[in-house]
Image 1: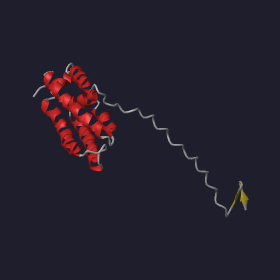
Image 2 (image 1 turned 180 degrees about the vertical axis):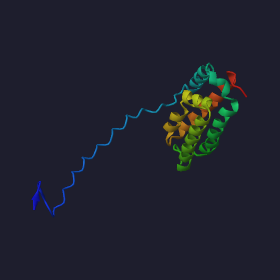
Image 3 (image 1 turned 90 degrees about the vertical axis):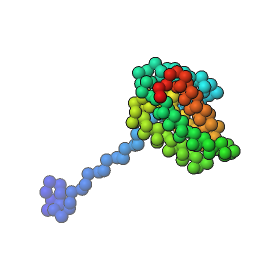
Image 4 (image 1 turned 135 degrees about the horizontal axis):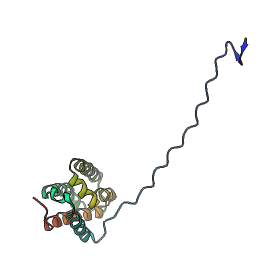
Length: 155
């Protein structure tokens, strides 16, 4: 029996599935900053600018030294490795360092302001497996600590 275009024993046809969506285009990735030969001057400028901010007084020497301590632990391993690249374990330590920095940024606004101003996360990410980039980053951190103290960093 045909009623309104349907045969009694025939089930209605399901609607056609919507066409699959094309994945959203990922935003273009920015090139990661690279520490240049002027990293000492750059560290001084970062601390000089940061010292003018209200959060500078809450950014204590112990906080910046805790960050340096993470870097120094890995620095000891890297200096013993004479190849041009970081081992898989060293790269894993770099990733762990990034996670720890993100955590510290979430805990303390002053730490977040410092890490953002000094571009520590992008610099860490840009190291990859390059030993020389890491060694330069470690010296940059030492310069940041020194200029923090020089410009009146609080204990």
